[in-house]
Image (cartoon, rainbow, N blue to C red; front, top):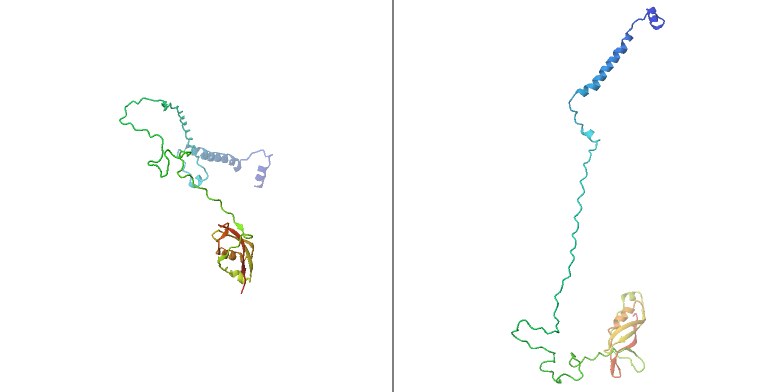
Length: 245
């Protein structure tokens, strides 16, 4: 046995011995060829349809979108504006020119003529109007313009201070009482010809007491002040004393 083994391994052996390895290579090649033919050719010969792919497989593929719709047709051109043709007016007859009537009127109305005044006249009027008057004037003439307003005069000199006929004491503000505020408020008043106080200005005041003094003075009334026998408005200075008891 040992002798036979060494004879197979040495190339210098003259006699070639056949072993199992001699037939292994051709048989392997034939088997691989048969398997390859069955894998490639057999599926081509079958005419059965392929199964539909599963929904999980379809999710990886995007269906092709259809072609976009064609654009809308362009709008029709706007109709051309019709050019207005000038209308030829019929020639109007000249009013100053006498035109003979086509038909004879049944009744002839008298001409109104010019308005010569009020029918029956006006008491104390003159026939034909007042000489030197104006056509369309107002009977009796225009009313007289109102006299200009009389400016207020300041008390002093010949203008005596009017006498107070109605006195109203001021209301002491609570906030001034709590703050223990007292003193004198000096005001400048304008008195109308009827003796009423129409305007009041503070000349020297106390912030917590000014409004109370103004409200009281506006309720005062005086006798009318006469200048040359005519009542006139006057300007005078008054004082309001605030004192805590």
